[in-house]
Length: 362
Ligand code: 5GP
Image (tube, rainbow, N blue to C red; front, top):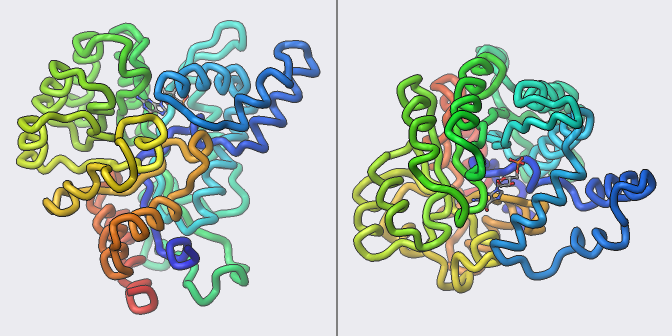
C-alpha cells in the first residue's frame, strides 16, 4: 500500500462534491443543524455510509449540495480536495464540477466557478500548478520519493485543471451556458467538459447541441457512458467520439468491439462501479478485459469521499485483484499521462516525473 502512495499518479475522473472529506461534511451538517436548516441526526447516518446503489448516490448528492453550495464552502472543499490528492502523490489532477445557479444563495454558474478557482488559490499544503506557464526550465513537477514518504518536509506539487460538468437534469440552454463558461474560463485552468448526472434522467438529444458546440470550440470532452444499459445512448456516445469516456460498464458485445476499435481512453472507477452495481464484483470488473486488450485506460476514484477510497487504493485494488506487479502498475500510472487534457508542456513535465521515479519504484 505504501508503494501505491509513493507511485506518482494522474487522476482524471474526480467529481468535486463526491470527493469531500467526511469530517467536513459532518462539520457542515452540524452548522446547518444549529441553524435549523436540517436535523443533524437524520443526515449523520447518511453521510457515514454503508451500501450505495447508483440511485442512492444521486439522492445523497442532493444532500451534499445542500451542505456545500455556498461560495465560501465551495472554495473550502476545493482547497481540501486538492490537498488530499496532493498528499497521496497525485501529481496531475483534473477536478470536474457542475457550475450551479442558486438564486437563494446569490450564486450563478460564473460565481460558483469563481469560488472553485479561489479555492485553488488558497491551497496551502501543496503548490498548485494551474497554468502551463508555471512550468519552466527551472520549475518542473516533482513528487515525493518512496524513501522520503512520511518524513518529507518539502511542499508537494500538483498540477490541477478543471472540467465543467453538464448535469443530465439540465436543459439544452443551461448546458450551452456551461460550455460557454468553459470557454470564458479557459485562461483560468478550465480545460474540458464532462457529461454526468443521474444516467436514468434526461435524453442525449438535450445535451448534444452543447457537446457539438464544445467540439466546434475545440474543448476536450469526456462523457459518462454505459452506467446503465441504455443501448441507444451508448451507440450515440460512441459515434460522437469524445476524447475520453467514463465507466463503460453495461456494454454489449458489439459495443465492446466498437469501443476497442475506437481506442478512446477509458476512465476506470473500480470501487465506484462495484459499489453502485455497474460491475458485479472487483474480480469480474471489465478492467481485466480492457487491460488484456491493451485498451488505453486510466485508474480513477470518481467520488473518493462518497466511496471511501483514494487513488492509491484503486492501484492497490488492481494489484491485489488482478495480480499486476510493480512494473505493470507503474506503466499503468505512466500511461495516463498521455490522456490528460492539458497541453504538451504539462505532458512533458509529467513524463519527467515518471522518468525520475522509475528507478526507485519499478
Ligand atoms: P459536483 O459536480 O456537484 O461537484 O459533483 C457531484 C455531481 O457529479 C453529482 O451531482 C452528479 O451529477 C455527478 N456525479 C458524481 N458521481 C457520479 C457518477 O458516478 N455517475 C454520474 N453519472 N454522475 C456522477
